[in-house]
Amino acid sequence: MTGRTVIRGGLVITASDEIHADVLIEDGRVAALAASGTPAAEAFTAERTIDATGKYVIPGGVDAHTHMELPFGGTFASDTFETGTRAAAWGGTTTIVDFAVQSVGHSLREGLDAWHAKAESNCAIDYGFHMIVSDVNQETLKEMDLLVEEGVTSFKQFMAYPGVFYSDDGQILRAMQRSAENGGLIMMHAENGIAIDVLVEQALARGETDPRYHGEVRKALLEAEATHRAIRLAQVAGAPLYVVHVSAMEAVAELARARDEGLPVFGETCPQYLFLSTDNLAEPDFEGSKYVCSTPLRPKEHQAKLWQGLRTNDLQVVSTDHCPFCFVGQKELGRGDFSKIPNGLPGVENRMDLLHQAVVDGHISRRRWIEIACATPARMFGMYPKKGTITPGADADIVIYDPHAEQVVSAETHHMNVDYSAYEGKRLTGRVDTVLSRGEPVITEREYTGHAGHGVYTPRSTCQYLN
Image (cartoon, rainbow, N blue to C red; front, side, top):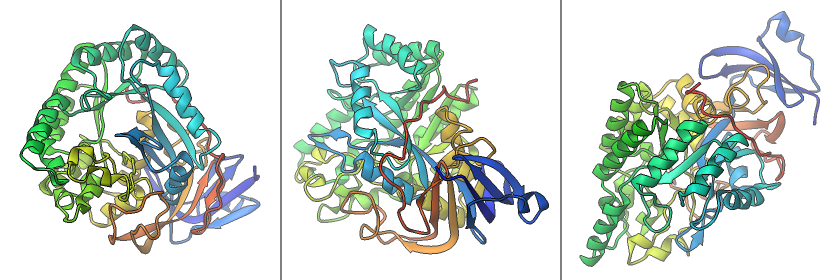
């Protein structure tokens, strides 16, 4: 561990403040901040000085929704914890919360242990876990209490994917009742999977097999219906609810209504829903398969409502749902049958830059950028102020960000282990320059200087919006 580092002359941006300040780092943590040029700042001494003049100094991103090495549809997500966390660092993200999976017939503990084994000593940045609950029974419910105690404080359930991850309303209610008692947070994939499967079967029978039909059968109304049902089940259970990857304006409306009623209901969206649309799913020559994810991409008019939700705080978080599958050999499994295309997009490396572009484009403010990408996910999942901000005592997870650098997104230059980019050719203003994780340089002036095994498992407290 190096001793002290000082970052000089940058504009420090957190969710609450913007200040030209120097940042002193000691033993992996933020030791002090002082306004640049003042005697207090001049008094900072360190072995290493980073010049941030003309740049932003921001907290490392917290991506609270990733799927490294996820088994899906007979294959695996193409990023390992090693490649995925390295790519995250390149994109200015310094903490991920990935999903450990309980298989039906197995315990939560077995699933969690398996994910610990995948991640341990392989990560370039810090990581935590949520738990996917696929098999609600008395034993599982007891295990949920134990997991909360040891820092796995959020549990994901699926109203989609019958036969794989699906939980029925009774199972969902039981898990929600348990989380109401133990302080855990239920995360919900809100789509009516039973109804969607009927529409899939009917579409295929009509010969509608192309990727674009994936978006047509997974109807926005069925996302809204499931969102409404999840909210009401949570209300009956007296439990908080976090709805993942919200893509449809009708679902945003359900969240807004619940929040207006004063319910502890939260929503996340993802960059793909803010920047991509069904136009991408309709790309010819099976190119549309690159954009198959669930919830699906929506028609362009939904984007404005998602941005509005982020501005009004009806949506609080932007995560990636990073779940990459290569076009060659993986996405191609669904040629002739869209229902066999592995669901997921690569994005862990692109999120911070895309959201900075949203600042440039006037969708959100600089502080809101940090709020939805760093501070709120850290608070939502019990890691604040250790993660998600720059304040004395916080982990020195800090990004030196060049707001003027221009880049063109491409699979040629990205670091995710996948053979295409969902944003190929997109021009962005803003780019990561240097990344520190607990004070250690992982990216140094656009060079990777990190290593697998630097990242450590981070236990989490319960949701900090419920205290």
